[in-house]
Image 1 (cartoon, rainbow, N blue to C red):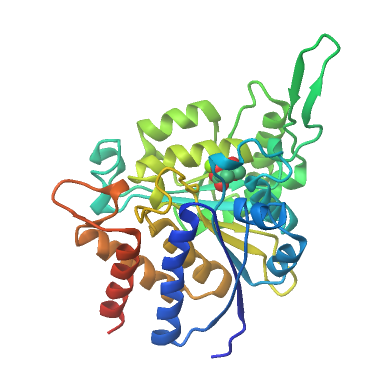
Image 2 (cartoon, rainbow, N blue to C red):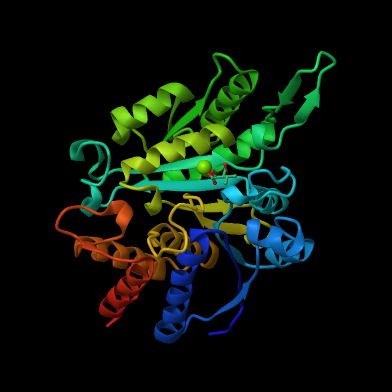
Length: 370
Ligand code: IPM
Ligand code: MG
């Protein structure tokens, strides 16, 4: 098979580095066992890039990202960069990747593996069998809206400003992604905003309705206020199929959803740009969790969110659904066999390090592919 699959690997900071090593292991496995060869470049992002270059991602790295078929991203940030300016702090690297590649649709599936139903903070009956998908708008809203900044007022006070702003097209395109994905699942979309206090929410609801009525008449579209959605997610999470929402609400609701699955360490994500004429899209794959400075460098991280992000890359960027299924099955089997990292540890289970978990997944792949 030709080595034409260009991947940029950006481990970033903290546990990003550790979990990415386990993806390396998977890539090597794929290379040896399935003759799938990726052309991998690795570079710096976040605090690591700031230390080396004084910015959270360089133009050169951005260039490589834009010319890759997919970007694998670990995590960024840490307390040592807390006082660094917003434009160069670690998170700025992530936001620039999203913005410059126009990765407007962020897919965050929250699936509760049966073996982990007890690890959730909710009772088993509420989460067992859970399979929801949050589609978060990723390049607009308050994350990027202008004006923004902190200004000094004449009376000596300071004023911090951010702007929540959405246009028709921004709302419509992310809703289309949600409806398209819903059609392959339960065909139910719940659009989430706060139209009771925000004009951008009023527009969001109107545009979501317009897309539903005019382009996806067979889908079942409902609407919910964001605060209620947060509550419903912990009350009866299985009522949802696909949730589509803005950047900030999506950030918060996906963290809520993560706990339903047992641990933030379990949630993968895919961020997709618009398709060009040949159907090719920019794409980036990253775990929902952050750099977890408190456990970084101790081998305690759970690599399964990163590994499942890699599986999403196989599926969405390279149309390798079978291989993605294989990786996901290996993860399920490893969990079924009682292997756990610290974040999902339960009585009577076997505690593994990050590296051991990565090895357990490839060992399981050996079995599955035998
Ligand atoms: C996420 C993270 C990021 C976000 C941070 C690290 C900028 O929380 O991907 O959910 O807020 O989008
Ligand atoms: Mg977040």
